[in-house]
Amino acid sequence: MFIRLYPGKNRASLAQVFLVSSALMMTGCASTEKRAEISADPASAEASQVDPYEGFNRSMYGFNMGLDKYVFKPVSDGYKFITPDFMETGVSNFFSNLKGINVVLNDILQGKFQQGASDAGRFLTNTTIGVGGLIDVASQLGLQHNVEDFGQTLAVWGVDEGPYLVLPVMGPTTIRDGGGLIVDKAANPGTYVPFTGVIEGISDRANAQGALSFIDEAALDPYVFTRESFLQYRRHLINDGKTDSSTEDLELAAAIEESADLMADNSKAIKPAVDTNSKMGDGIQPSIESADSAAARNQALAGMVQSFEQASIKMDQLSKKESRVNLASSERLDFSLQ
Image (cartoon, rainbow, N blue to C red; front, side):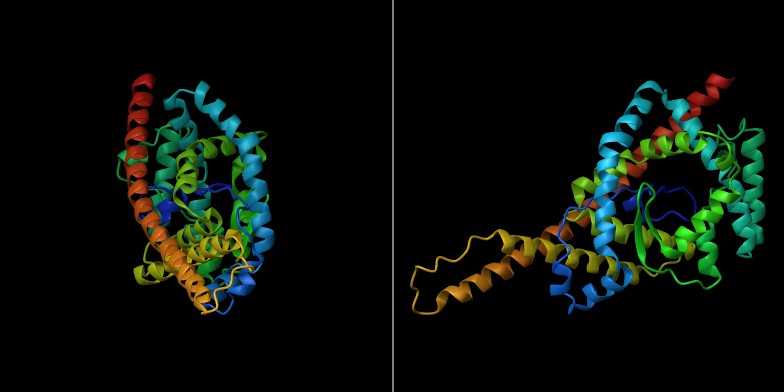
């Protein structure tokens, strides 16, 4: 349901825009009919290939956001209210460590044997010295946290990404990653323990609060913003952080332009109709309308550019704040266990 970012070589500033995630819930907040009108635009054509089921996806986006508003967020807020910070950190560390089994398996399947040995050492260290993974001792010893799953393994094996999908409750994924998620769940021992998934979901939702609030504040079209952020995050993981920055810039530019088109079209839709009773006679009115439309489009594009610049700054601040909170929580947990 949520996209989470982890420290280590798989972390990227662009990926921070979707802390997961980490995650993410979806909301249907814009019309889909306008897609046909701008299909001649190369950026729009590329988006339609990546997201051919956009109508369905936006519906699921709205459903998930409604479910989050009335169910998941209240439960998450209650969990954060009654749970001490050090305990929240311990629960998050526990589930993160449990996924270490999947990480090691996928390291081997991808032929990353050296990284697999490091990840196995990290898992064993946190499971033993870290009291079942409640304390992230391995990070303090310099063993970085890598993120590997079966969706990435399928990508390494040459399986195409497939269309973008938004699933009920699960949130954003692709055909390939959705299939990989089934294998990951089957390989995770926590799947077979009752209520483990529920507790993990509550913990993930609590960790994703900052990112979800950020998306609502920064994005003119949260659906497009979330889709592009998720896809870039997944491609970043698959390429082990070696994503071409120029490609990322082009993808973000496409998202900006698509959101600008949405704003421009919505502005024209609500613009008062021309008074047919007025007689211009000199043909000036059509040119004025055209100029207004162009000005609105340019203003929307400039606003989106500014939003993304502010987004980068805010996510850097959130990242630094999260690191300080996690470090302080870990220190408090270490002290309490002594």
